[in-house]
Length: 102
Image 1 (tube, helix red, strand yellow):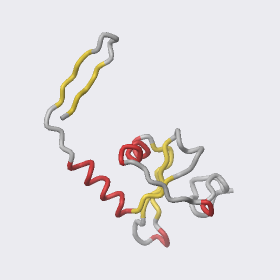
Image 2 (cartoon, rainbow, N blue to C red):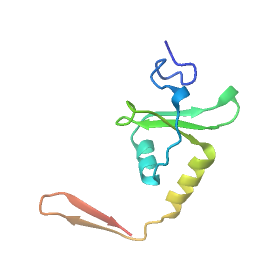
Image 3 (cartoon, rainbow, N blue to C red):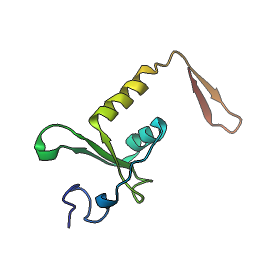
């Protein structure tokens, strides 16, 4: 049976009655976006984007994050303002390429 709050999940996959606030770094949160297994908009009553539920494939067994629209915009602004001025590439002895952005 599908979950009434998140219809893309099975009922009981996430226990919303046991939700906790958690401080997560911008890097860790961006990782959830980039590697998202679930990325689902939350539009209560079909009127306006309230936020998104997101979790990476790696973290989906331990929980799901809810990020409000306001927090999402703040994160995108923070990340977007950090413009790359230069980028260098260096081939390491093991064959991997190291990228340095400034």
